[in-house]
Image (cartoon, rainbow, N blue to C red; front, side):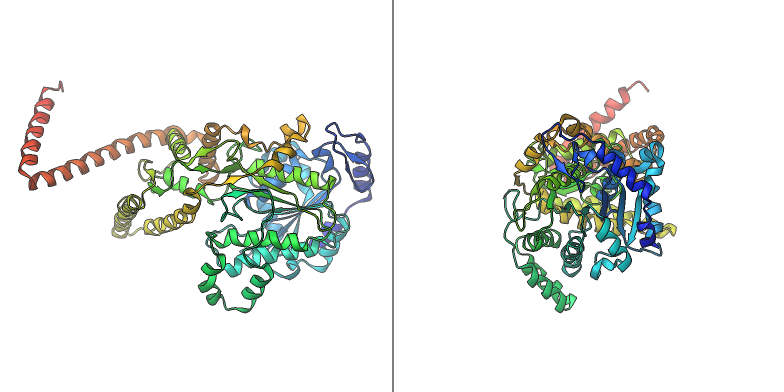
Length: 553
């Protein structure tokens, strides 16, 4: 059925697409001419997508959703968008697509051009299977119709087992390339990597570095060895890299360099991707990955300490800027494809050199807005800090994370409720440990290619497809980020903020009272052991009692 839907393109729609293409001016205002299949010149980024058929992997993921929405909203001339979707939890590809389109992310398109949602069609498949598990009929349709491919499917779990990480991030890329090489009208293949795939270096240029180990050898090794054995040798295989994610992304880049052939390929490397900066809605985020889960837990009052080098730069990039760069890079590589096995254009999509923010400033701003826009049902007053001392962090983890968790779970056990807090703290501890490598170091990312690409755009394209990280206002961004977590992760409306603030004020005084009792208890314990302290404590109590008596109650 998927193949049937994908191939039902009327002659009238084809003629309409050709008429739109023929209506374009022959010379681009910014001096870049991009030939399409009919020899017509597209004058801007949006016009380039007129009549184009797009195939996307990872379209149901965080970045993939934003990519699909941006294509529909900013490139209304796009012809079809095929999404590779695997059946999941009893839902087939069609069901999962309908669920995706119900997201508030598509509210603008649903309101302004609801019929355009019909341009999105599912292709049932699986990135982990041979030929991507796409039916022969659908493959033939893709060979004949697809013009642009965006490959964003990946496992982003830092602690993923190496066998699965290789299967998805590397073998999945290889299988996609095999598919792309048979696409007769392909103009661009955009591969999404990560800025940290070469994190074993401090200075990272926009080039593909030599592989830590031959990708083919890793594929063979993972294929023949038992998973338990692969797990046991994983630390030796990944070497100086912190996890299997960055390791397999580096392998995938090197495999692409060796086997891309004549494909018009470009690689986009985002750093730590957070919520949207401005579009389609500020603060859009729909997953717990990266710092988001930690911030959400901090806002709920259950996470209070993190190991971090506070003066190090935190390299964040809004998701909408990454998507804009992907769309523009496809437009660019279609104009200037590398001949044969020439160099692959690489774009480091980062903020560090342009608009640096330290981890301390990031955390401080998060606290400001977590208290300004508190979440509902907060367990304790949001507080805590980042620390450069492992000892301090360990003590905080036991006394501020696990001890309260055991107390709360004990109360739940007494009252017959489900005990979850210790489990939650274990997951948060694991997530924080995965981030430590990135919160204790910083890198010098070169982004010359990104800046040159931005300069080559017309003013209207710079506005409509903005990926200039120097324009980011961190105060505004983090405010919208916290509001986005509140709205899109916890599903809390703005109308609940006043009630949440009242609850937070009560929690604040409870927090201070507990601190006061703790300090007085500690002091009293010490005073009982030392005579001078005991005498001082007695005098202090008399003074406090005298002051209280003088108060006009």
